[in-house]
Length: 284
Image 1 (cartoon, rainbow, N blue to C red):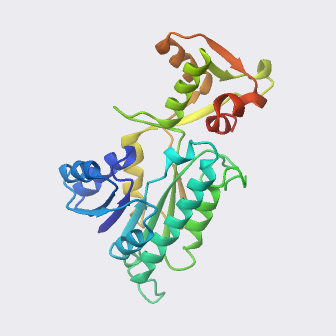
Image 2: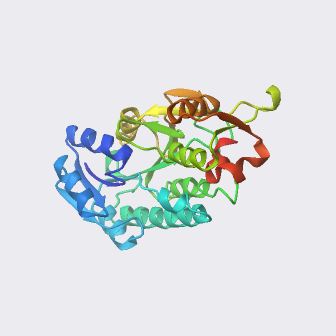
Image 3: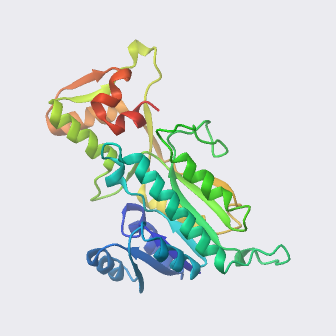
């Protein structure tokens, strides 16, 4: 299978790409820089598409040449800037549309075709935060300030147009060696600014304890790889990656020990002003 991968040089991409190659797939990897392209070639990728997720013509063209596309990339640098999250989500939906429209250009979605593998697949990397229920069947909270739920809706809208669509929801923390997770590094920066590591106050047990799910990057990569198989996941499915569950207060304690700083509780109503964007995901 020819698989176009965005975010191929990122955390999940670095795990996924070798797994795809080991299974005999041809990987077409999107690379923004010479450094990323060289790193991907070193892993055995022979087809590099130069560009970013805002280069919509590149996305459309490479998707049209592939049997499946796994869209891992999301502009976290932009999302973590003041007012940048909504713009990053807008760009993400534009990328999804370009990719899916490209896949549909040469898609055999005829109902008369018995070979389901001939129908092209789009796999979207989303997140567990903001879910309305406890399992994969749940939707997302429709929060205009957290509009990434619209990307999931857009993805699955292409199911009706003839694509096989899968959403893989990643936990807040996907961990692996040598990777700085944006949610954790943001908390470190906040702690340096204030001189202490903050954690959400549970109001003496009156409020729900803040818990984040976590997973190892190799497990996340494996689920993306397995999602390509129609026999393992039906079109329109949401797949969850969960390996562990951690109280965010435990994470704060670990950071405090590593940084040599005290911990201090932060009221939930002050989460946004203290933590910035991370405050939104801490209270979910």
